[in-house]
Length: 126
Image 1 (tube, one colour):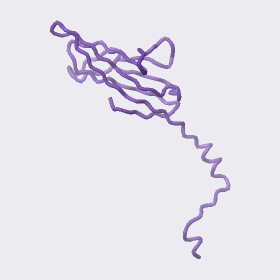
Image 2 (tube, rainbow, N blue to C red):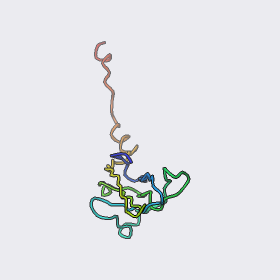
Image 3 (cartoon, rainbow, N blue to C red):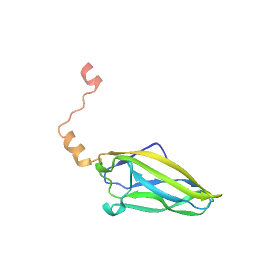
Image 4 (cartoon, rainbow, N blue to C red):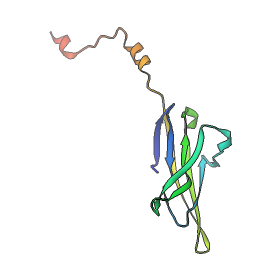
């Protein structure tokens, strides 16, 4: 994952935790320092994501999806990957800062431009 991701309010956010592990690991998502609480927000869900290795294998919960993103969704998100191999646990994680921008509104721009007369440098010379 990238270190930061900017998304427009009202759109969909998809964060994919890229996994290189066999056997397939367990993926856990965090928001801030707390595990992600899926039952607290119906706009947030988890989906399978592709493994980098082995190829063409889906990893459960590797994709975090937030529908209809709001300003309150701005935060640091982290995916923790845990796998048991050769008699011991292996862990890795990836963190991304999510920023939310306001929605572009053509109506607001049109309202701002009503009565606007551009002042070009050449119109002042002649």
